[in-house]
Amino acid sequence: MSEQFEMIAKTFQGLEEVLAEELTGLGANDVQIGRRMVAFTGNKEMMYKANFCLRTAIRILKPIKQFKAKNADEVYEQIKAIAWEEILDVNKTFAVDAVVFSDEFRHSKFVSYKVKDAIVDHFRDLNGKRPSVRINRPDVLLNIHIAQTTCTLSLDSSGESLHRRGYRQEAVEAPLNEVLAAGMILMTGWKGECDLIDPMCGSGTIPIEAALIARNIAPGVFRKEFAFEKWVDFDQDLFDSVYNDDSQEREFTHKIYGYDNNPKANEIAMNNVKAAGVSKDIRLKLQPFQQFEQPAEKAIIVTNPPYGERISTNDLLGLYQMIGERLKHAFIGNDAWILSYREECFDQIGLKPSQKTPLYNGALECEFRKYQIFDGKYKEFKSQEDGPGANNDRGSRERRDFKPRRDEGGRGFAGGDRKPREFKKNWEPRGDK
Image (cartoon, rainbow, N blue to C red; front, side):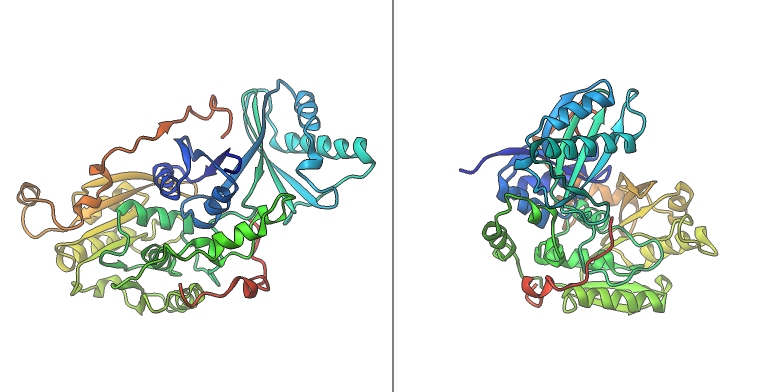
């Protein structure tokens, strides 16, 4: 059995439980939920799988050292004492990202500089050589997390944020983050059991993430590289076995529909769907929500309408009123999940949500609301047995036995048509995080 070690999967606030369920499904041990993160243990194979398979993780960190420090000089001495020759090749580049929640350390950039100096000085004292610092696309990326006086230095095994799947060719204004889109879909409990519809799909993020979930295609298959591939202990054969294992992929017998009233968005979505290799599962159409009709088959709606913040609209409240009207008249017997920001927008929908979940879309504190669209009075509907798919409700699921992590200040640290890997190595690199 290879060595087990602790890792940290970072995510967005509100997606921690979904991420913990993903990790448990992968076979991770000691899964513990924290704030915007989930800690777990596993071996090198698990680290590779976490990067390659997780849909709701932003990055996977591997802690190197945890220590107490009251000032920058103490940080410097602790970092310099690490045997860096076992971690970093002196001929490779590195960068340091600092996250600081402390009264003692007020400037994260200064902390980064002290860590960089300590690493460089360690190598100079060792053999007179020094590795180079490179901000963009370094060979090794380090993360220093300071909560008051507790410091944790970690290797960032992901590199570029994991939300950058690699299939997005172009985006509309304020596109939905891929990790958030996947998290929203997983929160509904949908895994391909019926049709899924996004009536305002923009560049197609929700339909694409839904197709990957339905077929259980790992999101990492589109990426050009991961940071761990440049580590001194990288195991190419082990990663190839993870990469080429498609045994968990499955058939999808339903359809995913994406509509939008913007011709440019429709064109962008088509290009992105094609790049993701899921064209046979997704039907895109240029259609405003006003023309939405009752689907012939059972379906679920997952959508992210404009909020009037990053994307403006002439009549925001009228838009949400229309959404409610269409749901009441053309989505009877199905569930709709809507992510939005303003309470007054939700009020215009005119329906009583059966579930509300706080989620952050960037800096905006939003809510993800579930609407069960029924024909008749609400009390009569609730008195009946729950319909198909009700057992997927997160609220009614058996509580998972995850250990809660202490809060920030005290916990210490925070398919078949896909391109082969040999071809993807020649892809142009995506932008930095």
